[in-house]
Length: 490
Image 1 (cartoon, rainbow, N blue to C red):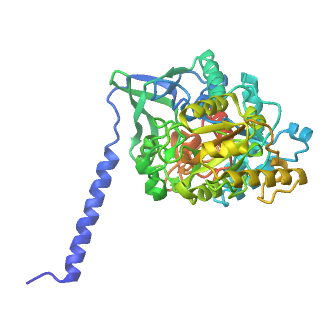
Image 2 (image 1 turned 60 degrees about the horizontal axis):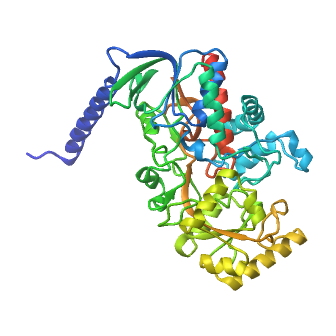
Image 3 (image 1 turned 90 degrees about the vertical axis):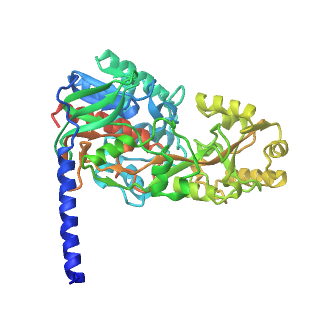
């Protein structure tokens, strides 16, 4: 006699339940704990970008000893080293420039700019501690330009630019400080596992990494493991899983840095995640190009046009709005237009990139707008008309294209510059859930003991759209606070 459908389903459910229990038990017992640790330290930090270095320096200066920073690449800095480096914070110096600001306004704009998808506690922690972090960085030797500006996508003039070059200024200063404080920094040390007492319970004990010779090394961390590996913008499969539009785009990131494997390791031991489909693009290489020129970082110094020579959006708009507008253009390609004075206001590193672009065909320079348009393949008559109308708006203090009055500056000093501005995957706002002490939270809302995370690997700070200049503030502010938390036994 055949089984009834009800009996069959009940038997199947029992088998399935037993299978799930068996898999769970195997998973719970399969934590890769070594029989013997190869070395023991107090703190292991995964990644030597701004978040990792800030955490190391902050903890070390508060007396934490035996700190090991593991960097999978052969050099330090991660994406911080190639970032524009603008740091957002309310600053009393803004009043000298007639700018009203406060940590509360910064928080309000951050939350609104991310469609209120950010965690208010994390956002307020960021904005109320960012100025102290700026002063902390200055005390270590980081120098900032005297004028406070509004970086691309910042929505308010509170961006502090480093004096010399890109984010490499931070990396240079903090890596030197870390070494002075006795922090051990090891390059070519790729973490392949984060080890917890049990896979989904207990304390995080340490990590397993592979050194440059291929040797697997197990390191016990008595106080904490801190994950600062960056995001997953360079992982094509991972990012397109959450936003299929992004599969074929280039990335502004170091392609070897933002690969997401440490994020997956934290998920494997129970970490919760949030906002994984919140992925930001920035102007970068158009499809088929390789060099990223930068004439867009400071919207007051440029306008954007399409091949038709016409503006298509206010250049100081939100980054997600800029992304969607550029992706809707023919060939998904725009051009930044600057005059020579605007070009001189770019930081030194970007000026070098733009000069290189003249050689590679990614940037153009000419004595007249007509000649510039012909070189770049832009409609000459429309470009001239666009710039004339824009300059009239600058004189009147009202831009018909919608740019805010404080970001209006005429384009008039020859030679004139143009550079490609396609869209590249830039920042992943989603990641592991953390609390205000940067402790990683599991799927049940509980702290995973011994595990912190800082920077782009975390979620819940920026919401659906990150304001330009907030990522640098994020990594250094929460890195500094994480060092304090660890020194206080958290």
